[in-house]
Structures are given as structure tokens and as C-alpha cells.
Length: 308
Image (tube, helix red, strand yellow):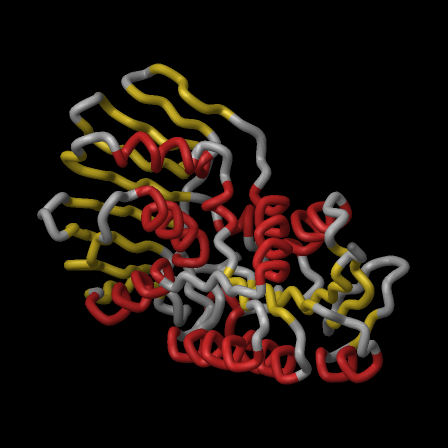
């Protein structure tokens, strides 16, 4: 079978670090065009807008959208209306209603829409899911703290309304939580901390319960220095389960069960190729729903101004 002719929109850090290597290693895809206001890929035709790209390169079959979420809906709409399959970087959009509309449009056109959650493809996530399915869970604690200056330097869009602030990394934790817990959890309370010069939060404290009353807490913070923390801890009848390093390492009762290498973006592109071949979509919105709930239920606290 011939490779899927792919285009990327929004050539930035995440594309260079993750998307390009994953695409190059996957024989199911051939990168044939890019559209970006600032970035290009050597040897690949480049355009300033997705509309110009789609008009000039009609052979494109699928598009990966990697621009900030505030601009993703219109780009996805252009791609779907042009008959292209669409890969949405996380978060899939700036609002639930936008992405729900894209889901309906893709279905009406028989196209594949992929709301990607890269952290779900971390090597130990499925093992954690299998463990929790057979365990009695007493409580879950999520600690997701990192240094925004290291991971998102001078990215102003992320601090603007719709950029999600600390929920940009925090949604990775929520994507794992919604994958590994045997029952859905529901937000009951939240506190969101906003720098007084920003429109998006720099920290968040979240409380959830599932329908049995099992509690889940989450602490997100973008002011972490030193060692970064991406851990999910579950107290169970079989001992303490710790899913650490963003889902790369699983220990139970201090015994290592899984410790694997980063295969997140290769896993995403394998999944994208699968749903295109199947003629289906994969657009789970539960992580984004939790973020929306946090903004709805969250108490707002103002802290000192933040500058990169």
C-alpha cells in the first residue's frame, strides 16, 4: 500500500522534537507539505497558510495540526472540507463545542478525526490500566509539576485565553487518568491560581470522585524547579502503585513492573494510520472535559506576576 501523503500545519518545537522523527520512522506516512507562519522543514514545500497549501498540493490525504489550540478549529474545518483526514495535537481545541463540531463534520464526510493524547502511549500506561482493573483502589494522587521556562519558553499563546496555561501539561495527566481508572471520575472542586498578568493559570488543585466515592486529587504547577514531577500514585489492596516519569515507569509495592523508552509519538502515528485504514475516528474528549469542568467549578486565586 502506498504511504499516506501527509502535511503538517504549525512547524514549531513539538513538531521538530516529536512529529518529524515519528513520521520519518513510519512507512505508512510520507510528509509532502507544511504550512507555518515561522517554521519550515528542509526539502519539503512550505506555505504560509493551510488554505494556500491545500490549494497548491491537492495530493495531500491527511493533515497534522500542531498550531496553538486557539487556531485549530478553523484549520481543521478547512482540512475536513477539503476531504483530508485530520490529526489534532493535544489539546484538540480551545473549546469542547469546536471539537464536537469537527467530530460531526468528519463523520458526515467519512473522514478520520484523531484527537491525540500522546501520554496515553507512554510505555507503562497499559500495564497500569490492567493492574488497576484487578485491584481495589482506595485513593489516587496525581502530582504533575514542571518548569514552564524549560518546556515552553517565551510561548505567549499558552498564557492567553484558550491556551490552557498549566493545563497544557496537566491535560497529559488527565489523559492518563481517564485511560487507567476502571470507572469515570468527576470533578467536585478546584482552585486555579492565575498570575496577575496572565489570562491562564500557572497552578491548579483538583478534587475528583468516582461513583463509588473513591477520591482522586491532582496538583498541577508550572513553577517547579529541579527534578520535574509527573507521577500518579494509587493506594490499592495490592500495595502502592506508582506510575512515574509521565507514564514511562510502573512500580507496585516498590517492585518495578515496567520501565520503557519513549514511544509516545510513534504510537500516535501508528494509531492515526490504523483509524484511516479502518475508516473510523478516535476523538475521546474526556481529558478536555475535565479541564472545562475545572474552569467552571474552580475558585480563582491571584498570585504574583509571572515573566519568562
